[in-house]
Amino acid sequence: MNAIEIRNLSKNFGEKQAVCGLNMTVPMGAIYGFIGENGSGKSTTEKMICGLIIPSGGEIKLFGRAHTDADVRAKVGVLIEAPGCFPNYSVWNNLMLQAANLSIPNAEEEVRKVLKTVRMEGAASNKYKNCSLGMKQRIGIAMALLGSPALLVLDEPINGLDADGMRIMREVLVDVTKNHGCTVLVSSHILGELEKIATHYGIIRGGKIIREMTAAELDASCRTYVALRASDMEKTKTLLSCKYLRVEEDESECIRVYDAESPEEIVSYLYEKGVTVSEIGTDKIGLEEYYIDLMKQKEGR
Ligand SMILES: Nc1ncnc2c1ncn2[C@@H]1O[C@H](COP(=O)(O)OP(=O)(O)O)[C@@H](O)[C@H]1O
Ligand SMILES: [Mg+2]
Image 1 (tube, helix red, strand yellow):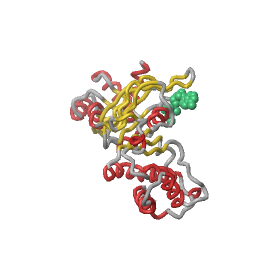
Image 2: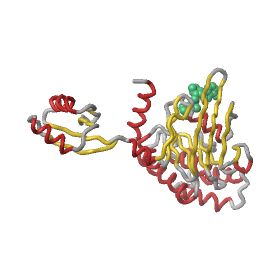
Image 3: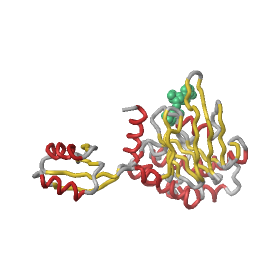
Image 4: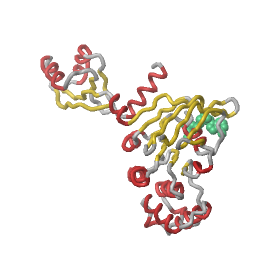
């Protein structure tokens, strides 16, 4: 069974079509990275999944049932924008209040549990307003985890976090999927971070999913290339461009050759032409470059 199945979803705001004909499948247990430019419809889609706004058309199924079904709704934890917390209350009291709102019976135990999951046991007595952005985001996740949801919907939870904040967030998301049996839908445009944890991806553009794939499929479709540095970079580039079809210089001033059989082949070819290779290796394009390439194709560039 899939955690989320969306068919032909649309949302209009007056004349504006924010989402149009969107299809999405999120398997249970996935960390689904939801990727797209600003304004592509990520937040609107997530708000419809969580029942915060009503679709103009289409169908959303959560765990095989209509997303409006009350039992299913209780299984969804949400963090869209900032968590609704009282700034002068402690982290503990904010969570206890939320537990009371949800009529959670063993509130203290549950609050302790979610604080542990988000690595904040030691900060329960801090006032919310004194918490760092990373901590606030994790408090938001703790709030969303109250009531043991089967699906967590997170909108850009790693935006603005420092490296350490991102690392902890990654650990938390892996933990909730592995140890709490939760499925996670997470939107982000920080693709390098997402790539470290996502098991599935959905790329949205103009309110439509233009590609959906597993991490293994991404890996298989990410081209490998040979990257090198040599004594005379300009000459090397010219020589390689005569023999290979796709030769580019990257940001780190390495020359990349996408259609070579092996690094050895390049080294001996350049050697014959009087060029010494100082560094060479093979690598793969990552999610970020895959995404940029896909966007270029769609724009016909
Ligand atoms: N309440 C709203 N009223 C009018 N337009 C909206 C509203 N919410 C979103 N939009 C528009 O819908 C499009 C998609 O927005 P959004 O879902 O927030 O994108 P994303 O989260 O991917 O940045 C944007 O063009 C945005 O301006
Ligand atoms: Mg958004």
